[in-house]
Image (cartoon, rainbow, N blue to C red):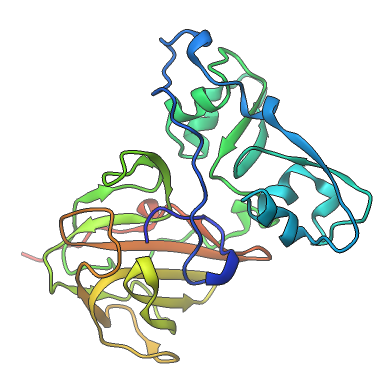
Length: 293
């Protein structure tokens, strides 16, 4: 599964994440489009919900087809994981975070910081020319600071040779549905049967079929990191097995529901937080394969 939540949620827990609706792509928003053609800004579509007895943070999020992290980000009173009865909370139209545009910066800078397509951010925020507060879709609030994460490069490339990225991380146009959706990893082109390699030492947390992901291997690494390898043809490791950098985990295939017609490896990098395994763009952490001549 490629287009999915960036935070582990719902019945698929930390292994495969539920799909959530993308903001409606009514137009391919660009600064050249008149504001009259743009949708109402996302933050102008926020609704209010009063917590009643018996409701939980999770049940409220589910009612509005959101994840808990979104509600926690919009409502500081929920950040302890509880929904106080009688509290009035803000409900955004879809998953994302509210961001104050720093002084001297623009919404384009925010788009670069969060690695979201500029046209998507522009349209989601009503094609405003100079907003000071924006809603960034698909980036979920987390109590863990990016600065506190393990930022070292991955020791090994997940394939024997450096591969072309057919589908990148973040908001992309799904090649199958032609809709804008969030892609939680990168798709690396490779021939069927190509060996898939562990990028760092770790422990196999999952190895088997996982719905849209197809044959999936999940490795937990030190420093609160996790990597996922999806759509495999074969799996060569088992649950609980210790693996080293460069060990063969399986082979490239097309199991599950891949987003590309060509064979590829769907690769994800995630970090552990109080909200589950939060996806991160893997590309900056990958080192190209060095060929000795």
